[in-house]
Structure formats: structure tokens, C-alpha cells
Image (cartoon, rainbow, N blue to C red; front, side, top):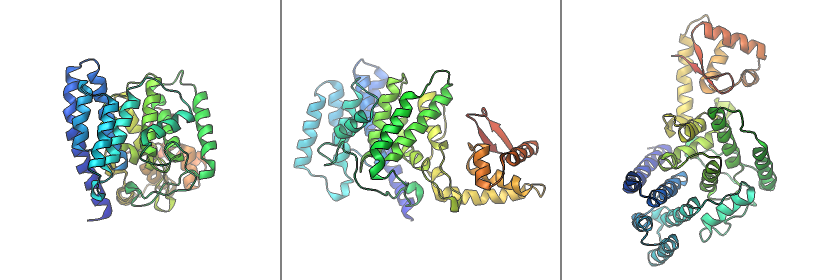
Length: 370
């Protein structure tokens, strides 16, 4: 079995274990008792977010989390019990950092249970500090070294992250742009796509050496609540692994293999999270090996569509098959043709029934028909 297959199998098993644990909290949601429901949702999101780094929580955490939901012990007492538990029973090398997952879950629950929030880089750093104090010596500190991270979805390759020397300036710049952004007059779909873009950019900076995705997810959850969105649902509970992989794919290019960064997968996630859509979320569909293999199959299909396709129509069709959200300018740049030539090719492809537009010119995407 390949490394990618092993990792995918591990994540599938790990997700199932986490979901079986968290299913025990569903009774609190069903009963809807004041206080218990909110605590249960916070715990579920916190536990689910451990999947972004391939971590799992322990059965012991579930046990004491339920006591916290019932009001038998405070969150501080949960943390004290975890500290005592792991002093008496240190996590071994085969435990996959389960002690970290337990302690960070408790810290996330505390943050999500609070209403206080300020949209600023300082708040972002503070969240990381609160999540990882006692776990990482650099909790809350901007990394001062450059990093690479082998990603399952990239078959072991890495995203290019911000250089250590530019992190602070880039954070300030991105936060400044977001503060000035006007949501008024936008459709819900436009808002969702803008938020996905902001999250993608913030994550790619990778301000922290470790724990970047979890800190970003907690920060964004708080920010979305401030904007008035209800994000206490199953998305971060069931699809945290997909969320991480979507962030990776939004920030990775390999032009040689025809792989382009795309927000498509992240937009699916936020479409479900914010708009109540029912997009199918499967991490394997993002895997670069899967994409390359399907691209080869699609090229063969395109060739079988008929000899009446011109070279530029074939090039446009192949590009749209991999980048359905691409603009005409982006297509022209990629295939080295003018925008007018791309427009004519698209018009011809539409007439031949090979592509159709799904949604508006600004926010829609192209569908390459079978």
C-alpha cells in the first residue's frame, strides 16, 4: 500500500473514531437544554478540529467533557484532570500526540465558549498562545524560520509559505484589507467566496511553526460569529480534514503537471458552512494523483469529442476541465492566447454543447459536459 493510501486509510479510521465519540454528544443537541447544547457544540467542534493535523482525542477526554457539559466540573477542572492524567500516564510514541489533542480541545472549547473577540493580528496570536501554551514553547509567537510541510493531498510535496521575515508585514496587510472590505450589497455567495479567499490567504502565511490550521480555524469561527453567521454546525466536526486539504489545494501550483491553485474545494466547504449547501466533500478528489489521472482521462475524452475542435478550443476545454472557475484573462495567460481568442473559443464550445455556465459571470463556474 502506498504512503498516500496508508495516510488516507488512517485518516478515515481516525475520523470514524472521532465521530463515534462525538455522537455521544448528540443527545445534548437533541434535548436542547440551555447551556448544555452550547457546551456540547463547542466540544464537538474542538474535538473535530484535531483532525486538521491528523490527531485524535482519548476516550478519557470524552468522559470528562461530558461531566463539564453536565455542570459537574468546570473547564478549569477539566484541564487540571488532563494535566494529572498525563503526568500519571504519559502519552507514548504510538499515541499520535493524543495528549496534545486532548489539551488543545479543552483550550478551544474555552475560547469558543466566550463572546469576546477583536479582529486583529494580536487576537490571532493570542488565540494560538491560548491553544498551545504548555505544549509548544513558541505558543503565540510568529515563527522566525522558514518551513516546508509534506502534505498528503500533494503526494508529499509542500505549499510555499510566507518567508519568516515577511510574516508580520503580510499579516498586517491582509488584516488591513479585510477591515476595509465592504460586504454591503454582496450576495451571500459572494460573501462566502470572499471569506474563503481571506481564510486561504491567512492560512498560507503560516504565521506559526505548528498548530497553524487549528489556530486559523478557531480565529475564523470567532470572526464569522462576529459577522453574524451561525457556524455551530457539523462542518468543523465532520470535515476538518477536508478543510485542511482544501486550504492546501488553494495555495499549490505545479504548472508542469497542469495542477493549478484553486478555491473550488474551499468554496464547497464554506458553501456548506455558511449557505447551507450540500456539496459533496471528499478529500481524495483533491489529491494531485487523482487529478493528474483524471486529467489524462479527460484529455482522451476531449479528443474523442470530434475532429472539429480547433487547437485553441481543445486548450480552453482542457484548462476549464481543471479550473472551472477560471476567468478569460487567466485562461488566456495560461495558454498564451488573447482574451478575444479565448472568448471566441468559449462561444464556439458553448454552441457545440461541450460547456455550459453554472451561475453568474462573476461567481459561477464552467461545466465541461460529458
